[in-house]
Amino acid sequence: MYFHLKEKGFKIFFAEETLKSIAGEKYEPYIFAALSSAPVMILVGSRRDYFEATWVKNEWRRYLGLMNQGLKKTLIPAYFDMDPYHMPGELRNLQAMNAADFTFHEDITEIIRKKLADVKEEKPAPETKGQSLRDKYAPKAKVDKLVNITDCDREFAINVLVQCHG
Image (cartoon, rainbow, N blue to C red):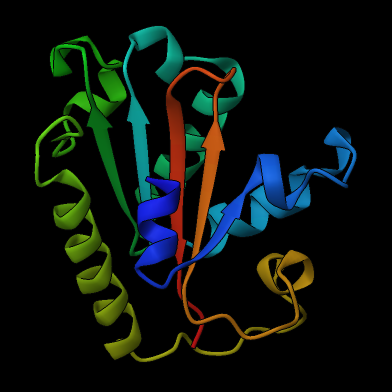
Protein backbone atom coordinates (compact mmCIF):
# COMPACT_ATOMS: atom_id res chain seq x y z
CA MET A 1 0.00 0.00 0.00
CA TYR A 2 2.89 2.37 0.79
CA PHE A 3 4.30 2.21 -2.74
CA HIS A 4 0.90 2.32 -4.42
CA LEU A 5 -0.20 5.45 -2.57
CA LYS A 6 3.18 7.10 -3.08
CA GLU A 7 2.93 6.36 -6.81
CA LYS A 8 -0.53 7.99 -6.84
CA GLY A 9 0.93 11.27 -5.65
CA PHE A 10 0.40 11.09 -1.92
CA LYS A 11 3.20 12.27 0.32
CA ILE A 12 3.89 9.30 2.61
CA PHE A 13 4.58 9.40 6.31
CA PHE A 14 5.92 5.94 7.17
CA ALA A 15 7.31 5.82 10.70
CA GLU A 16 10.01 3.31 9.81
CA GLU A 17 11.39 5.69 7.20
CA THR A 18 10.20 9.15 8.18
CA LEU A 19 11.02 8.88 11.87
CA LYS A 20 14.10 6.67 11.70
CA SER A 21 16.34 9.52 12.85
CA ILE A 22 14.03 10.37 15.77
CA ALA A 23 14.12 8.52 19.09
CA GLY A 24 11.05 6.34 19.67
CA GLU A 25 9.95 8.23 22.75
CA LYS A 26 9.67 11.37 20.60
CA TYR A 27 7.22 9.82 18.07
CA GLU A 28 4.07 10.82 19.97
CA PRO A 29 3.77 14.44 18.75
CA TYR A 30 3.99 13.24 15.14
CA ILE A 31 1.46 10.46 15.71
CA PHE A 32 -0.84 12.86 17.57
CA ALA A 33 -0.67 15.38 14.73
CA ALA A 34 -1.49 12.70 12.15
CA LEU A 35 -4.43 11.32 14.15
CA SER A 36 -5.79 14.79 14.85
CA SER A 37 -5.67 16.13 11.32
CA ALA A 38 -6.35 13.08 9.14
CA PRO A 39 -9.87 12.92 7.67
CA VAL A 40 -9.34 9.25 6.69
CA MET A 41 -7.66 6.38 8.48
CA ILE A 42 -7.21 3.00 6.82
CA LEU A 43 -6.37 0.18 9.19
CA VAL A 44 -5.07 -2.97 7.48
CA GLY A 45 -4.49 -6.28 9.22
CA SER A 46 -4.32 -10.02 8.66
CA ARG A 47 -4.91 -11.26 12.22
CA ARG A 48 -6.96 -10.09 15.17
CA ASP A 49 -3.89 -9.89 17.39
CA TYR A 50 -2.23 -7.51 14.91
CA PHE A 51 -5.26 -5.20 15.10
CA GLU A 52 -5.05 -5.48 18.89
CA ALA A 53 -1.29 -4.89 19.24
CA THR A 54 -1.02 -2.32 22.02
CA TRP A 55 0.21 0.68 20.06
CA VAL A 56 -1.83 -0.11 16.91
CA LYS A 57 -4.99 -0.41 18.98
CA ASN A 58 -4.09 2.79 20.82
CA GLU A 59 -3.97 4.67 17.51
CA TRP A 60 -7.23 3.40 16.02
CA ARG A 61 -9.09 3.74 19.34
CA ARG A 62 -7.93 7.35 19.62
CA TYR A 63 -9.11 7.92 16.05
CA LEU A 64 -12.49 6.33 16.83
CA GLY A 65 -12.67 8.64 19.86
CA LEU A 66 -12.26 11.65 17.58
CA MET A 67 -15.00 10.29 15.32
CA ASN A 68 -17.27 9.79 18.35
CA GLN A 69 -16.72 13.44 19.28
CA GLY A 70 -18.43 14.34 16.02
CA LEU A 71 -15.34 15.20 14.01
CA LYS A 72 -15.71 14.46 10.30
CA LYS A 73 -13.37 11.48 10.06
CA THR A 74 -13.58 8.11 8.36
CA LEU A 75 -11.99 4.88 9.60
CA ILE A 76 -11.85 2.07 7.05
CA PRO A 77 -10.75 -1.33 8.36
CA ALA A 78 -9.21 -3.53 5.67
CA TYR A 79 -8.40 -7.19 6.16
CA PHE A 80 -6.84 -10.11 4.32
CA ASP A 81 -6.22 -13.77 5.14
CA MET A 82 -8.84 -13.54 7.88
CA ASP A 83 -12.58 -13.49 8.43
CA PRO A 84 -13.73 -9.87 8.95
CA TYR A 85 -15.88 -11.07 11.86
CA HIS A 86 -12.65 -11.83 13.72
CA MET A 87 -11.71 -8.15 13.83
CA PRO A 88 -12.05 -6.42 17.22
CA GLY A 89 -15.64 -5.59 18.15
CA GLU A 90 -15.20 -1.82 17.84
CA LEU A 91 -14.23 -2.25 14.17
CA ARG A 92 -16.94 -4.72 13.13
CA ASN A 93 -19.65 -2.06 12.86
CA LEU A 94 -17.58 -0.13 10.29
CA GLN A 95 -17.63 -0.86 6.54
CA ALA A 96 -14.55 -3.07 6.06
CA MET A 97 -12.76 -3.81 2.81
CA ASN A 98 -11.04 -7.00 1.70
CA ALA A 99 -7.44 -5.98 1.01
CA ALA A 100 -6.94 -9.20 -0.96
CA ASP A 101 -9.46 -8.11 -3.61
CA PHE A 102 -7.91 -7.51 -7.00
CA THR A 103 -9.22 -3.93 -7.14
CA PHE A 104 -8.44 -3.00 -3.51
CA HIS A 105 -5.61 -0.54 -4.22
CA GLU A 106 -7.55 1.34 -6.87
CA ASP A 107 -10.74 1.26 -4.80
CA ILE A 108 -9.03 2.62 -1.70
CA THR A 109 -7.30 5.31 -3.79
CA GLU A 110 -10.67 6.43 -5.15
CA ILE A 111 -12.22 6.48 -1.66
CA ILE A 112 -9.31 8.59 -0.35
CA ARG A 113 -9.61 11.05 -3.24
CA LYS A 114 -13.36 11.42 -2.65
CA LYS A 115 -12.87 11.97 1.08
CA LEU A 116 -10.15 14.56 0.44
CA ALA A 117 -12.39 16.35 -2.05
CA ASP A 118 -15.19 16.40 0.54
CA VAL A 119 -12.82 17.87 3.13
CA LYS A 120 -11.62 20.57 0.73
CA GLU A 121 -15.23 21.57 -0.07
CA GLU A 122 -16.14 22.06 3.60
CA LYS A 123 -16.02 25.49 5.12
CA PRO A 124 -13.20 25.89 7.61
CA ALA A 125 -14.08 25.71 11.29
CA PRO A 126 -14.17 29.03 13.12
CA GLU A 127 -10.88 30.16 14.65
CA THR A 128 -10.38 29.35 18.32
CA LYS A 129 -8.29 31.19 20.85
CA GLY A 130 -4.70 30.05 21.14
CA GLN A 131 -2.79 27.55 19.10
CA SER A 132 -4.42 24.17 18.42
CA LEU A 133 -2.50 21.03 19.37
CA ARG A 134 -2.50 19.99 15.71
CA ASP A 135 -0.89 23.28 14.71
CA LYS A 136 1.59 23.01 17.57
CA TYR A 137 2.82 19.56 16.51
CA ALA A 138 2.15 19.47 12.77
CA PRO A 139 4.89 20.44 10.34
CA LYS A 140 4.88 24.12 9.41
CA ALA A 141 4.87 23.45 5.66
CA LYS A 142 1.51 23.38 3.94
CA VAL A 143 0.74 19.81 2.85
CA ASP A 144 -1.84 18.92 0.23
CA LYS A 145 -1.89 15.15 0.77
CA LEU A 146 -0.12 13.15 3.44
CA VAL A 147 -0.43 9.45 4.19
CA ASN A 148 0.84 7.92 7.41
CA ILE A 149 1.62 4.19 7.47
CA THR A 150 2.41 2.36 10.70
CA ASP A 151 3.76 -1.19 10.48
CA CYS A 152 3.07 -3.51 13.42
CA ASP A 153 5.97 -5.73 14.44
CA ARG A 154 7.01 -6.22 10.83
CA GLU A 155 3.89 -8.31 10.45
CA PHE A 156 0.91 -6.88 8.66
CA ALA A 157 -1.19 -4.44 10.60
CA ILE A 158 -0.79 -0.92 9.30
CA ASN A 159 -2.59 2.32 9.87
CA VAL A 160 -2.82 4.63 6.91
CA LEU A 161 -3.83 8.13 7.83
CA VAL A 162 -4.68 10.43 4.96
CA GLN A 163 -4.36 14.09 5.80
CA CYS A 164 -5.39 17.15 3.88
CA HIS A 165 -4.43 20.70 4.79
CA GLY A 166 -5.73 23.46 2.66
